[in-house]
Amino acid sequence: MLKKVVIITNIPSPYRVDFFHYLQENVKKYEFHIIYSSVRNTSRQWHADEDRIQNSTFLKSHNIKIKKRYDEHDIYIPYGVGKALDGLKPDVVVAMEYNPTILMAMHWCRKHKVKYISWTDGTLNSEKNISRIQRLCRKYIISRADAFIGSSTASRETQIAYGAPEEKCYISFLTVDLEKYIRDKKN
Image (cartoon, rainbow, N blue to C red; front, side, top):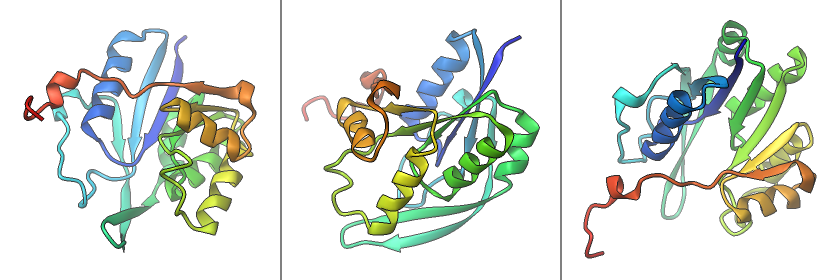
């Protein structure tokens, strides 16, 4: 019987959709299902190849926009995280970043004794200006995770800095076919 892995992330960004599609098509040892907190982020101007989005659930969520000095940030308050996980019955949940969707998923995993893996793209540099509450949230999630995935060596170092045991931290580099995303080869 295949192990069922549920990956939870915010939106279908093109590079992630390609990665998830690769896993679903090529890693036959597991059945992968993706849960997205929202269909799209209004502050992002990209669109994923919808033909590559397979075995996916899009949660209904309330979107809160946080305006920053040079950017906007979206926070999704989802509905039905537990219900979606109840229906999927995963053996493992891999959850990206540290938002309300992830907190709900982490608590569901603990309640149902399902392995929970924390995955981040964040680095100490990219997170140098986060709030105290955000730091506490990261430490809270990291203290309850069974393992960790960082999208770079710097992401792995960040997880360790927040309290992740070094021997439980792994790297999954953000690698995709870049030719697909090159707009102007001169630049």
